[in-house]
Length: 310
Image 1 (cartoon, helix red, strand yellow):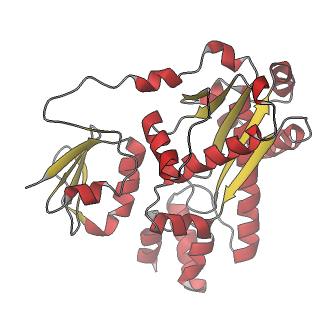
Image 2 (cartoon, rainbow, N blue to C red; image 1 turned 90 degrees about the horizontal axis):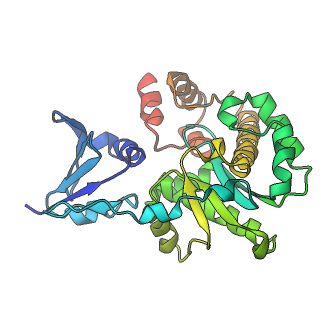
Image 3 (cartoon, rainbow, N blue to C red; image 1 turned 180 degrees about the horizontal axis):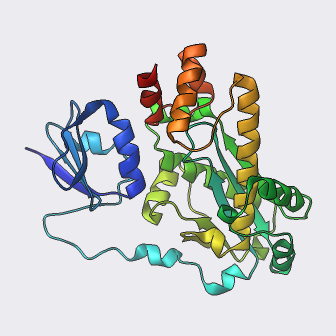
């Protein structure tokens, strides 16, 4: 029986479990889930390994652009190429572009992404305004700081992937990871078009997937990584530019959620908790179920949980 083994990120495993939620089978010991399709049986393990086996495992595996590296019969040494993309310390205190996104883990609302160019002599000013990791800030404070940032002479770009487009892309086979990558890329490209490239010491992206995976997302859409692009996990804790872009993206997400609440006539909660399931169920009961396509990421497990509440 043909089989392929891949090592995937935890984020991808979560997305796969949602995607295969209606085809899940009994989970073997040590596994995260097992699902069966017409092409293959997919078994994901806690280690991150995913086994595709059956009639056409390659066809099933190709659905996931998050594939990091295929495992051969003999183990290979871990690839080191992503270390090239670790930013030098000087970048964090120099002229650089930072990018981040918001809304990816929320059932309701769009994904928003922002990028901004910050010069080294503007870093202290942003700190004085209170710019720091947005996870440590309340929504009211975030909105005030974002308003202050946008008054400054700092080229930025803000993009919003609204739910109708998000759901369309997802049905076309795009993973959320690919959507995020393209949002980051286009926001950064927009900023680069507004500045003198000679002034930019580098670009820092808040890392959400392995660098080779990110590059494959771009290549699939005939795009390339700009020169001097670096990646760092939890980058907004280290880079004032990434922190500023996070605050801009988060503020946009909050505004979009308010507009969607007014449009639908329902108060849309953030996150993906049981409270969200109940809100979605009320919406489906009160209106046509298609309303979710306009305000929610319908492939999330919350949709089925809401249906079960009706």
